[in-house]
Length: 96
Ligand SMILES: NC(=O)c1ccc[n+]([C@@H]2O[C@H](COP(=O)([O-])OP(=O)(O)OC[C@H]3O[C@@H](n4cnc5c(N)ncnc54)[C@H](O)[C@@H]3O)[C@@H](O)[C@H]2O)c1
Image (cartoon, rainbow, N blue to C red; front, top):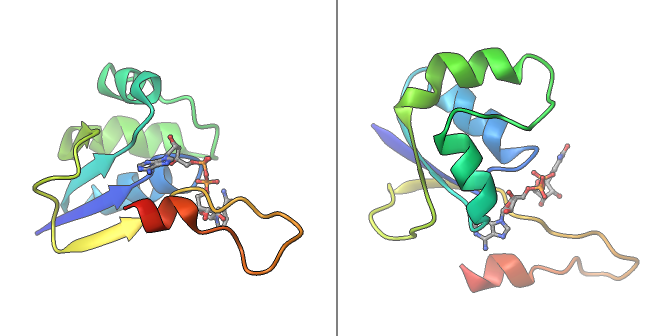
């Protein structure tokens, strides 16, 4: 089974790494520098213990900026910046 995670930031990358223990994961992000680091084995996310999970399971993750060929199950973890307005801005979600 393959699972996709869109947005590999503070929350998305840990989710992708945990899923990658058991599943093939497609990790999508639009930040080219972030993708370059992740592909070269560098994790800048300081989440506790994430380095261990990333090193152990990153080979089960395909890092990409492409939205084609994703799995049927997709976690969307892009920013929804919290401003003092209701409802929350969902512009990034609506772009997907
Ligand atoms: N960080 C937390 O502790 C936390 C806790 C609860 C909920 N959340 C929610 O999780 C979501 C993500 O938060 P975060 O802290 O991980 O954000 P983040 O800024 O750390 O990461 C977001 C990632 O998404 C990527 N991205 C932006 N637009 C994209 C797009 N259109 N397609 C693909 N990738 C895109 C960015 O390059 C970045 O790597 C938000 O909705 C936030 O409210 C976060």
